[in-house]
Length: 417
Image 1 (cartoon, helix red, strand yellow):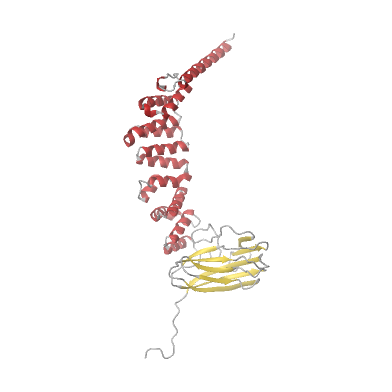
Image 2 (image 1 turned 90 degrees about the vertical axis):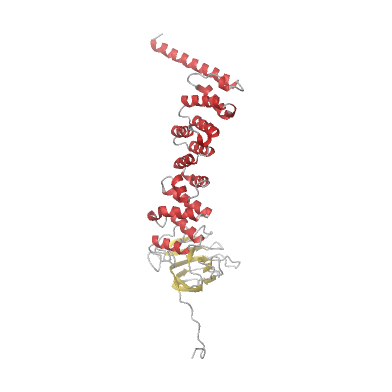
């Protein structure tokens, strides 16, 4: 036998011996319904040690010291297995709570052994919470978000149990990054937490643009919260074509954007309707808004629409231009002004099936309880024979302006001498 073959044979016999010893040790563990801590594992650990560690982690309450010893052996033999460190941390949290001197080290070892393992980071945060060590819980919630940014809202909801100041909450929980602030703003809107929304806005206001979801969510929240002047001021600061008290993107000079804040809302269009910015046919450059109907559907249309902050009790004129081409049916589209929370319902119907660019205007008084109105393009479905609508409609140059108060007419002879 050659030396090489002899060495190979020894290696095979050694491997077989190791497997045999490992098998017998594992069999001893499996055959012992109790006192697993008294079973001896091979020096290298093996499957027997892993099984002992798992059982000890499940039943550590019966003998915490023995379970800790076995888990420490497993952690020493397999330091890159985060489960052993987490089990040790859980025992420490249960026995000693926030006073544990080993909890922090065990959790750090768990994260270091599996730096991209999201469940391990989440488990570390939960164990810190179990120990009521909130400073440590904040650290691990923040670490968890680094690899699970989509869970920002969940982390904030957990930390709000003890972090009541919104600035502290953001500082201690959120990692650096705009996406985290965007999700936090969504949470503030959903929870109607104006203090949290203001804290987020103050952090990002200087480096934001009109399409940023943080700005859109914040302005939407301000409108819902009754802070209409602030919403209009913020929008005007970021939209050079908008003046507070007017119509945002009333000339359709930019894309419609996401349907929040003071943007146009489109949502889901009904079948048979196409809505586009028309850069080839407009009154004011660079584009108009065009709606096309395919003639095969009895369209019930309630979009696009836009929110307009106004002054309650004030008279306004809403004006613009429109154009139509070969619209069919007697149920033609119309413009509809509706008050949010107040009784306002003004409507102006398209005058003819076809006409060139033509001005239109609507004069109305805002009810005292309607600080926001909605301008909506509307078409009602009909039961008439010609119910399926075809043709095209364009809108452009929309303007909202304040009118002076109406002066009472003086009757002859009624004046003072």
